[in-house]
Image 1: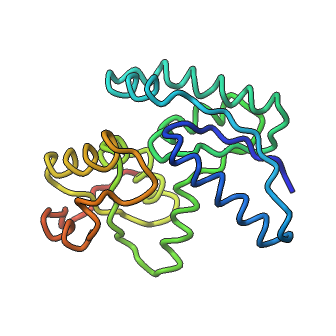
Image 2: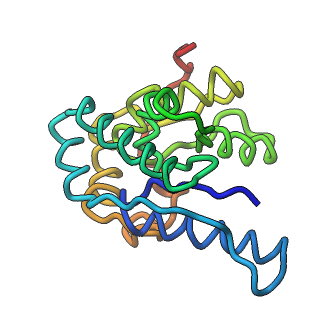
Length: 195
């Protein structure tokens, strides 16, 4: 089994989901006492969130590249970025190391394609909903056009309640029923081309 380098800590709760899933997968494939060979770099999310808030993506890129290079030096054979939003910098990371970067949008596309959906609902951080680094990869590489709330206030509300102020691995209590949430916002009738 290849050793994966995990770039995590954005938030630690999301990193724990990756860590658990990778180890449960190794256990299921290899037996009860098996676990995945992993190397972890964990950021202090407060620093990352502060840089995101002021839009300092150049500094964030430097930090992500440094983490990737440290993981490569520690013996990682492939990299995983343990959060959606920081995939905005996946190309920078990939260009700085000799390792493959496993992109979450590709794994997401495989899961979406298994359902037959072509226009899934995307609820995430504002960066992920509003910018094209994630949606664009789904559209251009996989023919999937995710829907996001049209209204900036609705995107802000979801991101603020469930992502920015309360990063945790479960759906936030105020928005547990996503069907109700989806009915409260309007969606674009025609998808924009991002390719």
